[in-house]
Length: 316
Image 1: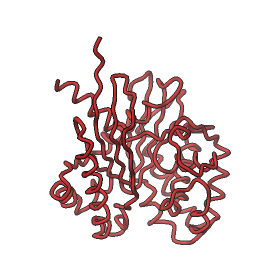
Image 2: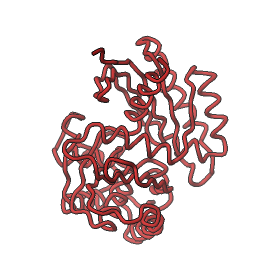
Image 3: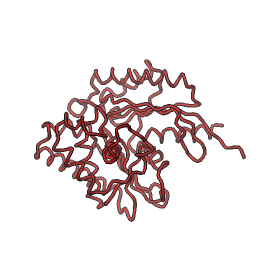
Image 4: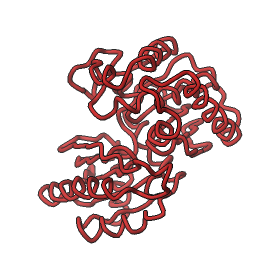
């Protein structure tokens, strides 16, 4: 029997990082990466204070998207999916940014709502997990928002998106270097408030496994393994016990930004955001009483690619 495969391209325009994937995908949703790239452009820089995407962040992001567009044209995939998340959703000038992306790079940028972001993230993150994937809570800690996807019996039972992200939380609460205890307290109070919304939206979890994706958990997994060269294969399915996450948070929170930048496993450009990101993950683990978290390097970008593969198949 003929098995369908397609070469697809996916671009995730996030609040902190823009990610490109060109890959071949088969009907089992196995992703064979042909080209992967990412760059932190801090698209959401200053958004929490101004309500707008800063001009400098627009130009940084357009430059990266222009480069990614050239690579996509060179590799000539069967289809391209480009999605923007919370920064472009929420910014006053988000529509103007999306139009400039289309006009200047040729990429058809789709600004997706939070529930669609959650659906696609779950599709990507779960595709690479080992073991039983029928009962999961997938948490995507983004730059401007965090998405929660509850999977029970192999079906998505609930999705919640809340505006607590690493960029917005850092800019709003963490001024000290290293952050002062009152700042950390105010940050945690902010997270507690949003977690009430999450608990109401998700309802009873039951017996599920916690899975986390995006830059914070993957960085923690790299730190835990003292990884000098980032290797997605070693990140996927790495398990972090709660005690280890607490240890890493204590180490990160008491360090200056410069000291964090020298820590093994922390990617350049992420050192400023790790305190808030780790605080978010810990608040989730404490609130739901998870003793460990499985990490997935896959997320929205891979979900976009799988979803496009399926849509291409329906159009044949």
